[in-house]
Amino acid sequence: MAPSNQTGTTPRHPDMALVDRCRRDEPGAFEELYRLNAPRLFGLAYRLVGPNEAEDLLQEIFLSAHRKLALYKGESALGTWLFRLGTNQCLDYLRSKRARLTMLTDAIDQDVPAPGAATAILGVLDKMDLDHAIEQLPGGARAVFVLHDVEGCEHREVAQYLHITEGTSKSQLHKARMRLRTVLARGKTAERS
Image (cartoon, rainbow, N blue to C red; front, side, top):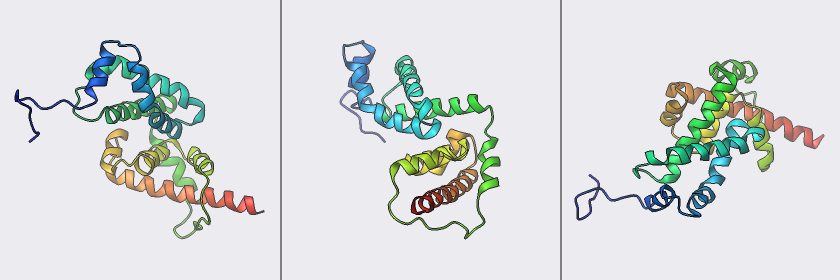
C-alpha cells in the first residue's frame, strides 16, 4: 500500500511539478523536460531506427509527449513514461516502414552461424563499431537487443512492446548476440589485415 499524505491521497511524484509547469506553458518548462530526457530518448531512437531517422523521430517523440502530457498521472517517473512513449513511437515507425514484424525471425535465421561457430571478440569494442553492428541487425532483432541489452528491459516488457512471446524475445536476443559477435569479429579481423 502506498503511503498517503494528510489528506488521505497518494503523494504526487516529484516530476509532477515540472509537468504542471509544462501544462501551464511556463517559459522554459518544456525545454527543461527536453534537456533532461532527450539524450536517453535519442539513444533509443538511434539504436532502434538508425542514425538517419533518429533526429526526426526524437522530434516526433517530443511532439507526441507535448500533446499527451495531460495523460501523465505521476504514477511512475516522467522519464519512464517518456521512455515508454518513445519506445512505442519507434516501434510504430518500424512497423509502418516495413509493414511487418516477420523480420523478427526470417532475415536473422538465414545468417546465424551454427552453435560454436562464432569466434570470441578480442579487445575492447569501440562504441562506433557496436553501433554499426547493431544497425546491421534486422529491425526486429535490433529492437529486442536494444530494449533488453541496451535499455535493460525484462523479456516480459520486450514481449509486451513487440507483441511477441517471452520465448521469442529470448530466442531473438540469442540470435542477435550471435550475429553481433560474428559481425564484430569480422570487423576486428579486417582491421588486423
